[in-house]
Image (cartoon, rainbow, N blue to C red):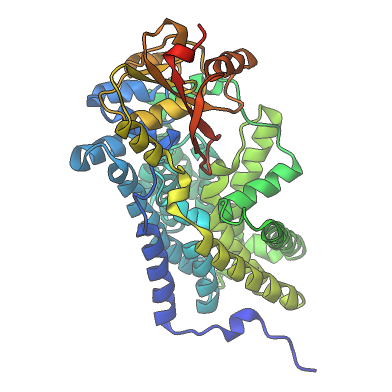
Length: 506
């Protein structure tokens, strides 16, 4: 009986194909870089970048993020101006660098050439990875530093590991979850003895000491009430879907279900295979801690499993034991390690070759549809066009009025010199705290106390406002005219109304 060939057996092994895959990934990351307007998460560091350097660092304390990305954006805006290019160019460079880093890491984990090709196709073309490379947030920096730290851990470069770990801590507050897996990789990179243990501990202590100046701000962030819903199995499936396909398949409900089924079945099969291998092959664990082992395959696979799976396990455990904080963006940096791990795991399973062949073929087809459906412009919808419409129709006596900071910050980037206000109601703790409103000199007034002839009211409906605020906003727009609806992938729909003073009931 003819044996079923694995899909990797038929992949062309020429190096030019790998180059073409990476080139396609680079081109897609560059294309449409400034096509969309900024959204709230980009507007926040962009607004802080307008401040003097020390004032910017002070403002960053209230953004609930460590300051490294804010510093990078501050430098970028000084070079390129305060615009979409300046906020996204660093993310683009980092997104492109992750392709090279992913390739190098995959080589260290001893993937074959065909396994490497399969991994790079997914990493280079996955829609959410494209989106991250065009998003002026710290997530590409987080991904790149995780790969760099893993590289230093594998190479026993303790100085590099200390520096990259310190930078990780100053990039995102989830860094400790990723660093646990990276330092375990370093520990199991050779024979576990006092000298190695001492080196690993020393590198960790250096990283922790470097973070001490920012630690009080980190602890204050932990006290903030969470907006995140409790994690359920369905939520986990949705998170995995979003960090792979973004919302590119939304118009194809059947493909959304197929993508969830395909991705989750591959991850489940990979997990079951890894658990089975580690339980039934104790020599793998011995090899992982034995530097004299001539065959390092077991050691590298053990490290890869820890690298790919432990951060999510740690975050999920912390989420259950402490409070709900887990959402899709926080696990996005796992995609590259998980992809390498899944390909490496499933490609060597003979009895499931038919399943894996069909699954990986489905993944490639779904990615193709996602890439064709992906539009850089869709991130912030028609916010820029709405701003241009208002600017073109602007009259003396007009004001711009916002119900939430999710519209105030991004829209304000396109209304320079125009009178803008934010409703004088408490925003959610995660959203424009009063300290930031004061630093940004945001005017807070009830609309009924503002003198105007016409008010352009930006109303973002979502879970960030109370019922009382929603009722007040509904009263403001009662006699208004809906002139635009801004729909984006990553924020609640923003409705823009034109309210005439003559029809406004105070």
